[in-house]
Length: 102
Image 1 (cartoon, helix red, strand yellow):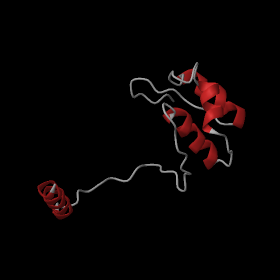
Image 2 (cartoon, helix red, strand yellow):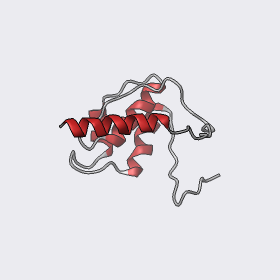
Image 3 (tube, rainbow, N blue to C red):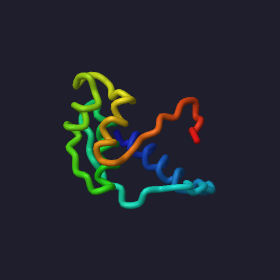
């Protein structure tokens, strides 16, 4: 246990001692984006809830999950995102193959 603590401590110190790399700033970053916690298999619905909350729409993750997933154990359907967010005057765009449509 003591050896493990020592190696973790040394690892943390070495990490702090490494020179910082230059990081480019994003072209766009949302400020003050609310944090919405997700449940099991609800990362997509929680992400939608955060974006909606940014625009002052408070929608429970469970509501979004029911509207965008065929069942609680399944994954969110991409096509359902547009249908759901359009209720709030928002739109989504599917990007395939890293090509942003014009």
